[in-house]
Every structure is written in structure tokens, then in C-alpha cells.
Length: 482
Image 1 (cartoon, one colour):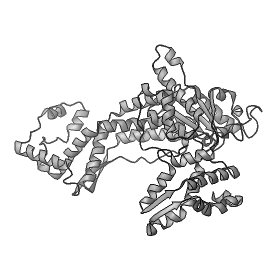
Image 2 (cartoon, rainbow, N blue to C red):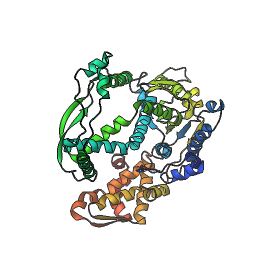
Image 3 (cartoon, rainbow, N blue to C red):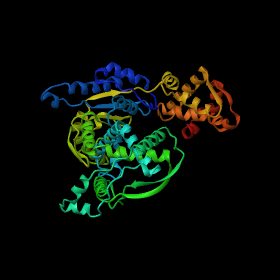
Image 4 (cartoon, rainbow, N blue to C red):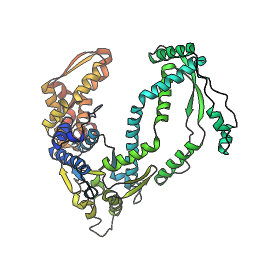
């Protein structure tokens, strides 16, 4: 398993997303767990296959949700996250236990769908902003030119203070005023304006300080509390934000900073929010992935004992999750969202319970079950060295900024992997996350002294054992330190 996320993953077209290609892409970041990778790859391919169906059969085919079973730190979350990144699908991770935080009521389970839509909104907005980047840049340069040389502005007729009121009352004055032509610039002014725009574009004025007016959205103080009012608060805030006039404040900034602010404001104006919301809802419904972790924590024998005893709260959460996974319509502030074709991936260690402890209805909604293997010493060695953003490479580059040349020998890597495996066997098995703890202990002195000392440091098996052997051998101490 790799615990790092790439800066950017190259997206493949649907035709290229064969199950084998998906598994090969996941292999670049996640060690082992072939069965889990195959299951999610098939589930993802089935989505593409469904899109190619015609007629009523297309609506009848539903996702085959997956339940991943395995100890913490073996790659369950990472597989789901990488899968979503691979196809640019909206993705959220939730913990089932947070719906039991205050007993049976807990947090509104439907909030996971609303969070998914918000993730889709952010994705689509970033895409639209990228599309309008060029046009927004030119508009921002225009606004900066107005500030730097007001004499080159386009001459406009004086506005009538009663024009807005007249238009609201159905008068004709505003229409006549709008039809009056804007006076064009002279050729000299136009030439000076073009030169000014080129100079702004090339960064000639970047360090000059100017004073600009910046729009500030009105702040709506929350009048409601509790999770059940989250959606209401969001709707009221958005409604009042559109009605109340925008406040403007003056700020003194460099031209480079002002250009970025103007570019963001102009890009926001160019984006059609209504079509953005429609596209985001469609994306969440068709491609959304919801990862529900800690499913084992809400499993219990309550349904077998007639719903009596301490498991009634956990069973209640299962019954609340059931309609969402089955397929229902959830109301959000961006419109109704159907969950029929959202892919749900459940996960849990299930070391104190088993999947059959879930209520039968919920078991049936996770028909694909895969068991993830515990990580071995060889897996740890692979994780340390081979993934794209391997842990050892991260530490090597971090300390290189202080002039330290960090070299790990094969014996040093072997010692870290062996001791990590030993500690996981003696204490709680937290999988690959143990490597973070081990490396921090091994490199503590180097990281502390590197700004003053610099130089080259070789990490071999003797170096590792000097710093870890005593803690590893003392099991009581390793519980607290490692």
C-alpha cells in the first residue's frame, strides 16, 4: 500500500479503462491486494458497460457494491481514492461511526449524499474555471488598465440615478439610456491602451502598488445549530447572499496580486452556476463513489436478538444507511439526487465482528466481498522503495533542502521492514502506517541536527537497530512510542 497521493494522475478514456489497465494503474501506488483491485476494476468497467446499454435495461442495471474486509493500513481507503482519481469521479469518505456520535439520532445519514454533491460541485467548478481562464485573464487586464491609466477608459454616458427604479416600475427610460452609443476611443488612446495591456500581460507593472475595490460577500451569521439545520443554513446563506448588495472595500495591493483577484472575480462571472449545478448533480448520480469506513463498528447481534441491548443504536444506523445504498432520492440545496447508480464501497477490519453481523438487508446490498491481506516484511520493503512517491524518497528530498545527503542501504531498509513487522505482530497491527512512525524515530536526530551539520548520512542496519532495538524489545515501551 502507498499512503501518498500523486499530484496529478493522467486520465484515461473510457475505452482505455479495461479492468487490466485499471489494476495496472493501481499497482503503481498500492502494493499487493490483487483481489480487491480486480473487484473495483470490474465494478468501474461495469459502469462504462451500463452507459453503452440501450432502452430500459440501462436503468435496470445497478452497481454491485463492494465490502472490503481487512486490518487498518493495508490499502482499503487508498484503493477507493485512487480509483476515483483515475476516472475523475466525485469521491467522499465517511466513517459509519459518526452517525452514532449522539446515540440513535446521530448525524443525518443523508449528509453523505449532500457531501458527494458538494465534491462534484467543486470538481465541475474547477473545470469551468479552467475553461474560462483565458477570457478571465483578458478581462482582468482590462480592469487593471482602467486603474493604471484611467484616461484610456471607454467613455460612457452619465448614468441616471433613477434608471434602475424606472426599470423596476416598467418605465422606458432605462431602455433609451442603454441604447445610447458608447463613445469610441481615439486612435492614439487605443494605441496607448494596447501598449498598456501588453505591458501588464508581460509583468512590467507587477511590483507597482495600486488601490483597488474588492467585492466582499455578505456574511450571514448562523441562526441555527445542529446537523439537522445544515441544509437550511446553506440555503438561507445562499439566498441572502444573492439578495443583499455586495460590500466593496478598498485594498492596496501589487499589480500582480490585483490581477489574480480580478481574474478570479471575472472567472466567477463567466461561469453559469445553474448549468454547473445540473452537471454536478448528474456527475454525482452517474459516477459518484461513496466510501463508508468502519462498517464493522456498527455491526452487532442486535437484529438477531430482536433489537434489544446495546446494539440497537448501531442497528439503527444500519437501517438509516440502507435506503441510501438501496437507491433513493435525497433532497439537496442543488436539487434532488438519486443514489440508484452511486457506487458504495464499504470497509472494516471485522476482527471483533463479522459481515454476517450486519442486518440481512444491508448485507444484500454489498454482494461483492473481498478480503485484504495483512502486509508482510517484503511488502513493507516494496512500499519503502518502489511506489511513485515512496516514503524513503520523500525523506531524502526533504532533508536535501538542508544540505543533507541521505542514503539508505539495503540492510537499513531490510531492518526497518523487519522491525515494523515485528512491532505490528507484538502490538496493534496498523499496517503500512507503522512505517511513518519507524522512520520518524530513525531520522529524528538527523532531522534535528541537519540545518547546522549537513553532510552525508548513511542509514544501515546498525544505525536502525541502535535507535529502535531497545524500544522494539521492550513491549511495554513500544506500545507507547511505536
